Image 1 (spheres, rainbow, N blue to C red):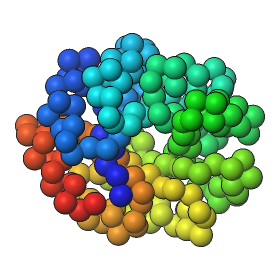
Image 2 (cartoon, rainbow, N blue to C red):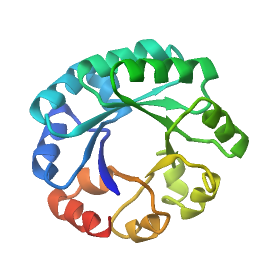
Image 3 (cartoon, one colour):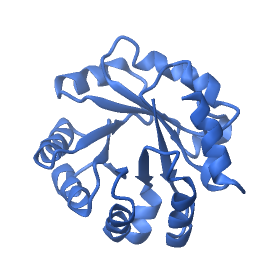
Length: 204
């Protein structure tokens, strides 16, 4: 089980500050969508340069122009890019094709997906990695709900989980045995982010 740190709603300086404090405890650095919209591929390049031994995920949340956006991220140094499950099959396929060209990975974001039929579509496209994701707005109604694992039950995907995960909920989340646990604000907004990262690491 790997720990992915999501950098969202942070300034450039804040991103690097929290990364320097927690790098020993995290496996994957996620450059969040908001950070990418603010700073573009420049911050992906700088994180790659500064943390050469970590895997980097560019949370592009692509829903069109899959090949083009994937190429941007991979050329900037990302190892993984995200594409939305509700995108057209062509968009997802183009993203996967470019990822293969760069020896990268694609994480398909299942935000708002409720029907298992959509997952069968992903199987037909040879998708290997998906993300069970409770969006930021939805988190106002509660944190990650382990019942979401029912959506992917029986499929052979590698699964990442995200959405309001913190020190109190990590035990419940890990019962679903995901491959990747994604944590954002619980670490990045903590007074002592390293201690929080270490405590979450204990569970995984």
